[in-house]
Image (cartoon, rainbow, N blue to C red; front, side):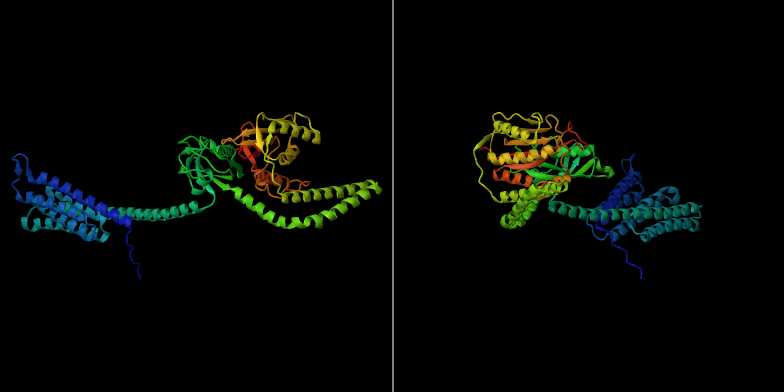
Length: 549
């Protein structure tokens, strides 16, 4: 069974109706030209003496206006088209006879209705119209032979008919192909619109922030999650990343990735920022720690655009720590009796054995036992200390004197020269932090720094700063290789360590002590062109103190 012909789409039907209206307007123009050429006597100032041409052209003009008005009522397309073509063929045939047949030169007018039929009508109707015009021309030529006994232009009529059929067939096939292409484009456009709507829903609902950025830092668009992470009230578009001081870490990370593209991630911290009225605002409440991933739009018309994926890792880090703390809390109560007491017995027995056994092999084995006992004991002390949330001392601490004493103690413990640790200008600065807690936090950070620093002069730096909101910060930095994004993702998790001698609790305890003093400890990556390394990145630990007010 032959499949039924698919009905044209709404877009194709609209195109056909617009073409029909253009067809009717063209008919009015042709009717006016015929009236001026055949019906008006410019020398005498009126209509020509031949009433057929004048009355026919006037009637044709009136009918053309009526057909144009009827075409605005978009109903019964084929019927309207058939009526219009029939009217055209009839009027042109009357004028053709009045002009004397083929020698009058009006046979060319048949191309107008036949071209319209070829474009707008099905092939059968278009060929039928061409057949009517051809048969009329041939019949008129035969009539001249039989009745008028004149030499008719029979060959010319035949050539006209062949040209009508060839033109109709070619134009109809071209028009059909164009309509199919338009229908295909309409279907593809509809599918694309549906896909874009789906993408918009997915992008709007996804938890990760998405920014589309040009190579010059221009933000073209961003989803709601990106606006929330950046602290934007309006649309995330139409501004430069580097022009907004609040987004400087993101802009620096993006420009660094453009210089050395790769698959690595970057971790940045966006802090509260208050700008002047009318400027691009940043976050106003709490800092947010973001993991950035970059992707290049590799299509040709992309014009150097990239996508920045932003993930708020603060909540993920806190959730991971809470899960580990939940399991660790159940162990804390039994550690003192189940682990600490046997550990003390092992350590005491090792010390007694060391007094009696003096051989090199025995000393080496006893040292291994002693070192591991000390490591486990240190881990137990850290866990027990973590469970003791002592209330901090709220008295202000003068940073200048505090840092001087800490530097002298640290250099003495590690046997370092005094110029290895460089202190920034802290004159007149004071912070609200428990001195014992701050001492323990900074010692932990310095112990990590001395492990990776080159121990050259000023290879370890401690310097205070103020953020955009006026809160005091203390930066601890070394000239080591820095922390990779993979390690940074787990840096403050308990029991996570990259050292065989570490317990994995030092940085976690440092952060907990900072939180206990209404402060925040974080690791920030600054992309500095003067820094060493291929990514020009310089990492540092930053303590953001509580507001003195």
